[in-house]
Amino acid sequence: MDYVIILNGDKPALPPNLFKGKRVICADGAYSYAAEMDIEVELLIGDMDSIKYVPKTVNITRFSSDKDATDGQLALDEAIRRGAKDITIIGASGGRDDHYMGNLILLYRALRRGVSARIITDHCDIFMFDKSVRFPVKKNYYLSIVPFGGLLHIMNTEGLKYRICDKVLMLDETLGISNVTTAGSVYIEVKSGCGIAYVTHEQI
Image 1 (cartoon, rainbow, N blue to C red):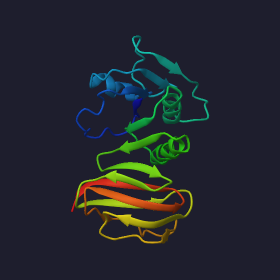
Image 2: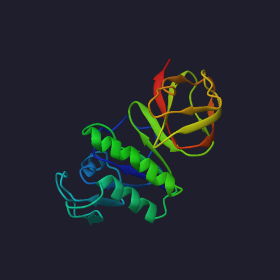
Image 3: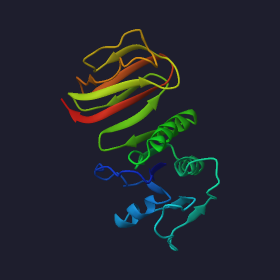
């Protein structure tokens, strides 16, 4: 089961048919965007502190503003509780930088629970990985790999201009930034650690 979570940040130019066959959860003020775009919403969740009006025709789960999680985390947890296997998050960037960092953490939260998740912005698709992974890309685009939460040991890569071979990516280095795709897919062989892939929309 696939879900789209809409957060209350900047909304990117979306891929065609992004919502087709997917269920949608809105976090708080993001509902205004969904209503404007005529997107069918399964659930509106949050403390409702940034929404312009609370609709009467949508299922709502309301939380106190004195809560221990962001509206984004509440939305992610609810999607997983409802059986989500793949989650796309939009509206994760823009606005407060601390919220953007918190939204990156949502990818790790999904990863730990065995759920595939990605963030789409106007600049890139973002996902986390903690094991070897192959994913489709467009040729001659920037792609960056950074460690998350510790060291990332990469044994090998395929489909990148600058091959990473038996290298540990450190938290205080920028080795993985601005690599370039050379094929229609990229393979990253992971020995240990967790990383973030930024598959940019910027062509060389």
